[in-house]
Length: 124
Image (tube, rainbow, N blue to C red; front, side, top):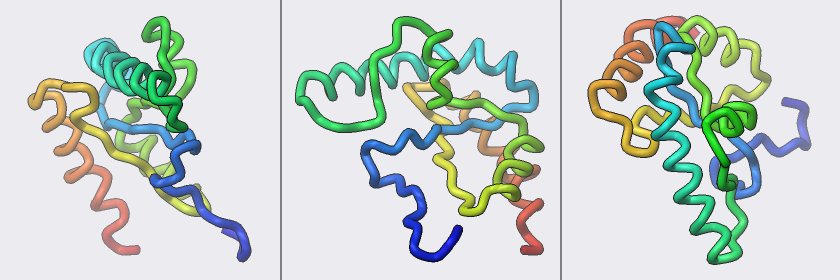
C-alpha cells in the first residue's frame, strides 16, 4: 500500500468488504450457505433502510443477485491463500456463522482455515 493511502477498514460502513467462508468445494458449499447469506444481508439491509443508516448491506432479490455483488464469498483455501498473498494490504472478514449457518458447516470452514490457510502464513 503506497504511503498516504488509507487501507480499507471493517469500520468503514460504506466499504463493501466481502465476508468470506472457506470450503473444499466452493460451488457446492454455496448452495448450503447462500440462503443464510441472503437472510443476513436482507435482515441488515431492511434495518439499514428503516433507519436511513449507511452500511454495506442492501436487500437482494435472490441468491443470484447476492452472489453477483461479491459481498458474500466462498473460496477454497488455495484461492484464499493466493488472494491474501497477492493483496497489497491483506484483509478479509472471515464469517463462518453468517446468517445462522449451521455450526457443522461453520466448523468445516474454520477447520479448513486452521489446517490449510494458517500454515501458509506461518513462516511469514
